[in-house]
Length: 272
Image (cartoon, rainbow, N blue to C red; front, side, top):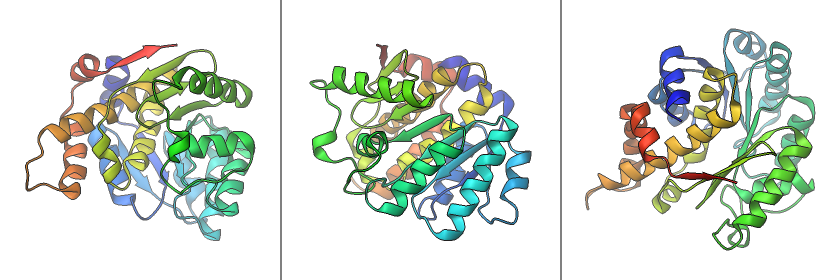
C-alpha cells in the first residue's frame, strides 16, 4: 500500500475524467489531493485527443446523456488502443435501461481495468439486468461479516469471467482480480451522508492505476484503503457545528495530508 501511494505522489499522473456533473469538482480536487492531476473533458470533439495525452481514464455514468455516452465510448476505445488503464463507475446501474446498457456496452467494447461500484450495481452487471435504488446499495445486497465469504466468491467469479478487477465498496470493501481478494475494513458510516465519495474514489483509482502499471490489484486496494482511512480521519476532526459539507472537505483534506507511511499503518485489510 505504501509503495503504491508513493508512486502516485512521485509520478503525478494525468487523469482524464468523464464523470457526472454532480461531483465533477470534488473528483478533480480528490485527484489533486492524492498527488495526481485531473483533466475534465466530455466533448466528443476532443475526448480522444485528451485521452491520448493522459495516463489513465475514469468513466462515470452518474448523469448520462446521449452526448456523454458517445464520448465515453470514443475515449474508452482510444484509451484501450493506447494501453491506458480505464476505471468504470456504473453509478445507478439497474435504475434505468440506459444506465445498465451503457455500462454493459462499455464492459464489452472497452478494455476496462477496474470496475468500481456498490454491490447492487455489480450484481446488476453480473446478471445483465436488475434493479437498484440508485446510487446506494439495496439493503438486501449489503456485504456483512455474515455473507462475506459468499460475496467474495461471487465477486471472484465475476472478475475471473470478465478479466476485470472488481472493487465493491460498502461497509466492507472487496477488491478482487478473480484469484485473490482484499477485504478492507477502513471507512466510516458517515461517508454515506456525503454525495460523491464513490465518484471521488473512482477518479483516485485511475491515478493509482496509472502510477502502478505492474500491479493493478494492489494499486486498487491501496486507493480503496486510502479513501476509507481518510473517511475515518475526517470524521475524527468533526465538531458539533460541522455537517456533511464540512465532512466532504475534511475527507479531501485527509487524503491531501496523508503520507504513504500513514496509509500503510492505518490500512485494515485481509487477503482471501
